[in-house]
Length: 150
Image 1 (cartoon, rainbow, N blue to C red):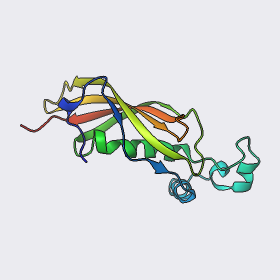
Image 2 (image 1 turned 120 degrees about the vertical axis):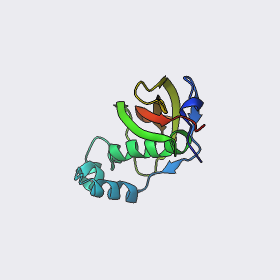
Image 3 (image 1 turned 45 degrees about the vertical axis):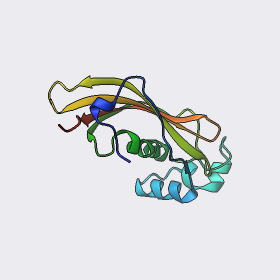
Image 4 (image 1 turned 30 degrees about the vertical axis):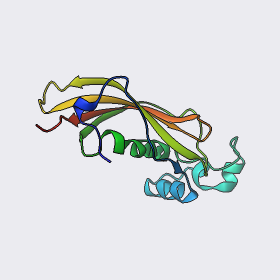
């Protein structure tokens, strides 16, 4: 697996990423603990059961991070200089333990860097979908990408 160089990115390209991931209780617990997030909706089964959701919700920051991770191999692996920003982040549907998630990416903007002749800027629109094809997380990621070596 390796990402795309700037020249390999075209507005309108669509990528359906091959790797899918089922979220486990351990994923949610470790991520919440590592990020010092004590939200009982993520950690306390009795509290969550009494909520409108009726069960534990997966930490939305985990969902976001997983979405980016699932997309890296096909987009920016070994071709990224830096992520410049994450915009338009939405979490329209909850993620629950046992959900199987997959990612899709559309390239929505490509432009040359004004300050670096060896780089370009690409905006990726990422979507994370569950097994019911509901979008559970979305964002635009702006990346500074290497140009293909001469």
